[in-house]
Length: 190
Length: 199
Image (cartoon, rainbow over all chains, first blue to last red; front, side):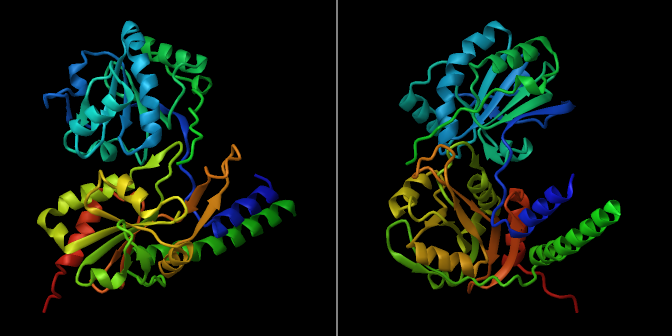
């Protein structure tokens, strides 16, 4: 670090009015990370935890109906699900909504989601257990249910880097930084 | 020589940063960071409201805004889980979300946005009212223009703490934005039921 960047860094620390915007993009775990158990339920309130996915790799998306970019990312995930299933990857879109399946069903109906199943966070502890300070976030889990990477923000899952990332997940290879999908951009203001 | 300058510079920077870090630690332990819990704002029904309207209740206060173009913080969800942890005691506290974006966060917009969090009260106001409330809480915020140049798509950088204020609005504690819900609930519970000093 040169003197100029040291000074600039110090100035930023001392005068910044703001909490820095959390980093977005692909974060690859140094080694696969064991996750705490989650109480995930389906539309009939039956247990639908990750342990029911019979040893498949998983794309675990966390979203909520009050999170605009999360809802905007859902149609892409909805289209992605059957393609992932062909590769042997399970896609779980887990809602963190307080009102559970009602909020999910309403959102799915409103934006025409058909392939994603209703999955709710029964104990309302997923965000804390998975250390998700912002939404959306998508975790990539290996066959043993361990986190190998996470994507913070809404991703363009149809992009070539995303294809490579999902291929790596399907075949059990460690992701690399080049596989980071671009962010999906939502530009409309309220 | 260059190395010596670099070390001296690093030492200076550390000495400038450390007092700030110490102040923060004190504040989180109940020190006095110059926070005054006074405000005159507008509630989600468009009615003027002041801190005196919440007399008798412990207040949990966060500052933020509802427009999140690419990622949304889970702070409101954290607050609502903390309130669940408190059970019936949540009737003894009020949880306030104060917008630092009064231009876009109208009372009606706040009402719609906060519908999934029925126990959280959204407050907004005129830019001057919001600025005064933020100043009292020692919260800084600043508009940042959107990368795409859309004048309506700006973001608002802001300092993000969870304030706990007593039943008359005096400062009790400031906790980090990313505090765990059980830790926050525990802290509020501690203020609701303070332990008596041992004789």
